[in-house]
Length: 164
Image (cartoon, rainbow, N blue to C red; front, side, top):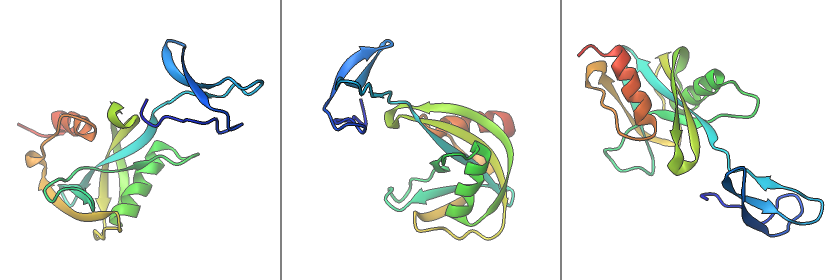
């Protein structure tokens, strides 16, 4: 269990691992508490950004020099996925966007995340926030997917939008 709770956030008792509903869960056995850490995946929004007729990929500050990917971020409480992806695009690139379509929903089990990917068309001048080190624009036909995480969404988008 990736982000394993050790202590109950309600009463402070030590949690134990037990099978519940067919999965290993962290449970509080303190009298009357009943807390269960379900370990559900965290929703993350991802933007396949089309900017000025090209595809925008970004590199986080702590990534290797040649590694670029989609703009992503955690969905906030009370926020729709569409609003969340547009907020992330604005926060990270300063671009105004419009959601063109939902590309799909993809599990990213290694980080216990559920990726909700959108095709977003943008306008404006790119100004990266302090999370990002660089960006690059790629012609649609040169965009390449990677075999995990947001790369699955990129492949689905390529399959639907790029003439081969």
